[in-house]
Image (cartoon, rainbow, N blue to C red; front, side, top):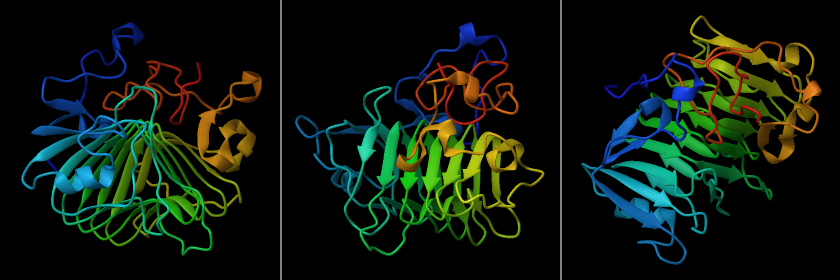
Length: 307
């Protein structure tokens, strides 16, 4: 794709060399699996002093043929957003405090189509109230689009968390995804790739994939509250801890599983030790979903490094 994963200076040199959140040159913004993404202009979204009060309006104002960085304050409103003709970066303004992206509409919060690139960082996409609505993904990527997530949370409790369809590609770093029917799902020729993810489902498998198994994860946790195996592992995945295959196979591992909070529970850490610890990936994330350093060795699997 021409904007693949990057290797940051300091990898393998010890935790003291890692600075979170990561920084880039002027007119660039760091978004995990895409690295430092150049942008052409900035729009600010805030309830009080931004260029726009609604994220959807800012996306509508982004220019075609450019990459627009949209910085979203926690006070802003999200709404239903369709991106089909422009490249945008959507990022929460306050480090460590994610923009809460909600909507009352039945459609997905974010739909990406038309071969564009969308980059998302420090955002919580939350679809938690079915209210009798038809099941929909919280995030839908289709039509050869490319979507990148970093340090974010996706909750889709009326359907799936993220659905990649047709020829779309979704790449995620240090992100948690919880769905009802599945956390991550692919169909058609789409694929999903991720490192240091926590992926769960309340009623189905953590992942749903086509026969070619293009949901490839590394140093990640998957958990199904219904105990359903997903069968999505392939030679392109590594170090995926399926919590349903052994103890502790309980949502109590997480801070608040049913609300979509997949932080590791930290009240009594003796009950929160994984089957195996992993080394930081040479071409993977340096920082977890909260902006804490991922240790060079003996790192927790999943999106959260407990402090």
